[in-house]
Length: 105
Image (cartoon, rainbow, N blue to C red):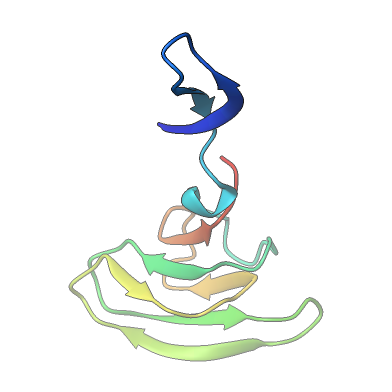
């Protein structure tokens, strides 16, 4: 928890503090969108499966999917890309997580 000064002093002359919320940049959320579902642009992606399979990612609405290639079989694997959708593998929800840094959860 963080604290902020209230601008007042207590009877000992010390600044009075109160709890404050964390800055938005301190929050991270993850979602597991269904294959081919367009969502907000991710900060990065995690492949959650533990088998080698080919994935494709879309970066613009109305655009085409870009072949990322085969992801190694030692999942989960972090990929520093910023897509809005994915497809590939078995196309199962939960295989791919989109991570958002600096979002309120």
